[in-house]
Length: 97
Image 1 (cartoon, one colour):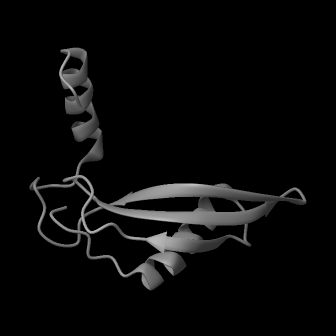
Image 2 (image 1 turned 135 degrees about the horizontal axis):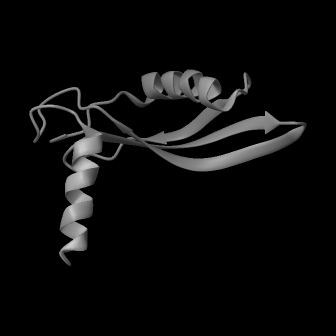
Image 3 (image 1 turned 180 degrees about the horizontal axis):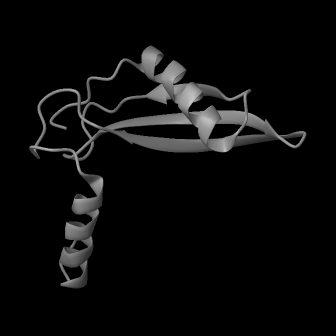
């Protein structure tokens, strides 16, 4: 993404709901949402902290989410698999990625 346009309050709610489905914990809370002005060129970035309980123990992780760009982007389509393959090939060729 050429710039991050994500609303941190909206991201907090959406990330909590999404993460709850991924880890199977209904009590996920998301806090400390930070949206850098720019980060990378293929996706928007959201930095956050998530907390939930897992078998009676409280878990807490600092995480980053990469989200399809909502505005102008460098690449015409959002395809992380292809981007990964290109970066892996460039890295194998000895170039910094």
